Image (spheres, rainbow, N blue to C red):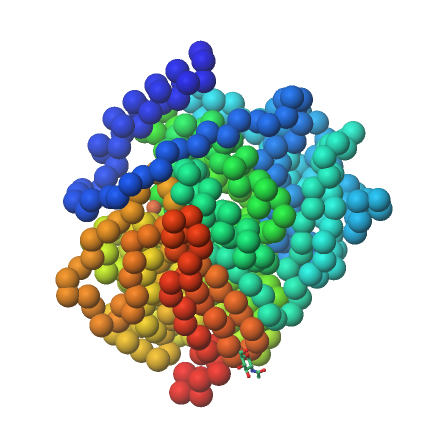
Length: 432
Ligand SMILES: *[C@@H]1O[C@H](CO)[C@@H](O)[C@H](O)[C@H]1NC(C)=O
Ligand SMILES: [Fe+2]
């Protein structure tokens, strides 16, 4: 069956199932111009050459290199500090998956290192090695660090614009709050997405968590959730004592502890995610990592009319907000709502100087368009709202100061539209 035909058939199935999966929430907001979906084909004449390369941080000084080939071949990476001295090599594992009629390529994962911080490395993939040499830059081992923060990215002309701006920001690491490819069961779109993001994701670590578009369950036909996400975007969960790729944590730049939570897996008290989070927060030593940043998908605070009252927002907030508050988490980033919103420090719906700043950054550029209608009157705890595509930059300068800024994709320029200096909660004696 031709690929386009298969995609159409699956889309019919998706439409059919979509009727049952709306959770009873009827969205009545209007969405302004959407830009068209891009399908990125494999760009090499050699159809077996490595593609969809992306990297993610593992531990303090290692990097996982992930890529796909159409035929099986060695999961081997050769790397070094200059293109002429690629002297080190490491091997890893290969996997693949089935999804209805689709059979994935060979997905290779190799962890390389130890690597020096803030250093450019050159690498080649496979054995014999790819003719192409890739390069990556490791994050710094000390502050400052610059994070790019995005969510609900998708793969449209808007996504392309967002990615161009992120690339120009010269960030150290990307944090993604869920909803990556918007493949929505059409697995070829995961491949296309992998190719679209490769120029960025092969050069800087992309640390991601999942959104509702990653679930991809089909009743009876494919009952396992997150198949493509887990196979293609393996994150360093074992290293943080988590038993699931859907939630994990890591330290970076000798000052920031990042926690990725799963909005679409169990989070209630007693669940393994809950217990893991409790243990993870207990282990954080704020004298070593003064900053704690959390990412979720469905926002706990949201004054947009879109996605109000969903259980992943309401119940997850009820289950976990106390833990994050007690642990003095500094930021909670969310996606899901296709717009930008920044709240003041909050806890239990009220302004609270010891609560986290909640930010919705679900405006990466996906095909569903923007969520433009807000609750009127605007709640006092909401500082800034705007329904435009864009991205966020979190620059953590030292143990006390960070600058958050949001950049709108204005007429295809990245325009700084909101910014705020924030100090860590550990530097506020009242929150000790
Ligand atoms: C931290 O960085 C901010 C912003 O650059 C600066 O104003 C502040 O003095 C720095 N603090 C320390 C302790 O270096
Ligand atoms: Fe979403």
